[in-house]
Amino acid sequence: MTAAPDHATPPPLAHLRDRLATVVAIPATPFTPAGDVDWDGHAALLRRLVEHGVQAVTPNGNTGEFYTLSESEKKQAVESTVRAVEGQAEVVAGVGLDIACAVDAAEHAARAGASALMIHQPVHPYRSAEGWIEYHRVIADTVPDLGVILYIRDERVAGEHIAALAEHSPNVIAVKYAVPDPVRFASVARDAGLDTFAWIAGLAELSAPGYWAVGATGFTSGLVNVAPRLSAAMLDALRGGDFAKSMLLWETVREFEELRAADASADNVSVVKEALAQLGFVGRDVRPPSRVLPQPLRDRIAVVLEQWRSGGWL
Image (cartoon, rainbow, N blue to C red; front, side, top):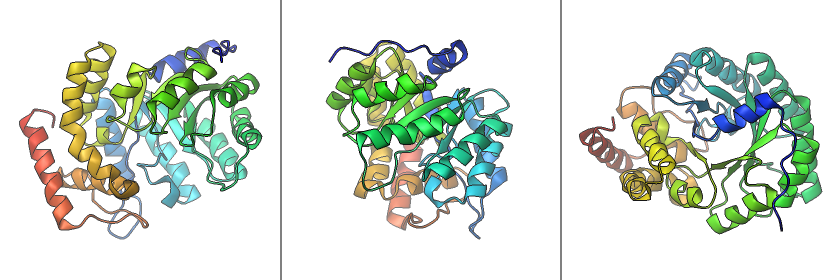
């Protein structure tokens, strides 16, 4: 299939699309031991990200425990992020679940000052291609002045579906691709339009070199909460075409990221929060169905952090 022609992206959204070719940080949402959101800690994490040069942040992403937050907490997370970054980074608000909730969240994000949405993969167990397009179209068309990033974790979503959606909704400007198959990604990106969208490797630093080689120009990161210098160095290496250096960095982050990915990513958020707790930034508390890590895993993270400290990454 030939690449889809570029749709008429309005100039401000074209600029935003270019701005997403970066490390897209997924900030953690810290909790108190009582289970409430630690909003002061949340703001401090966001300020630290922008102080280290992060240019795009996604409140209410999976590392932010989107599915455990109440609707009011999700809205407050967007507001907290907008205040904390003070215009120094693009705020990409995560929205999803049923259409009514997603539309309400999208409208709130626009009012709060976000510049874009990331629409989570629909959680409905039964999905048609036409229904997938319609779900995203309704949400995107609610906020035509905001950029929209599609979060794709389903290998059945094809490039032609993305292109058809964008024909209806020109504010769909980016794709966070999280199917663990770079060959599939290369095909989808070219069938949808490689130059039409910002293609973001959605499986973080370990996937970034492989996906970059076949078309990605940015990657998401939860690790950036902990070691922003490492994520920035990976981005610089990839932008410079230095794959040898990018793979040295890949080796540096490998154990940490493999701990996050173990057991179908059961401890994905817990590993990040444990590291943040050991560094003294926020607490390690998570909400079920995640868990606070057992001591042996805490000890492994301590070793990784000491290695990063010795390497000058912390």
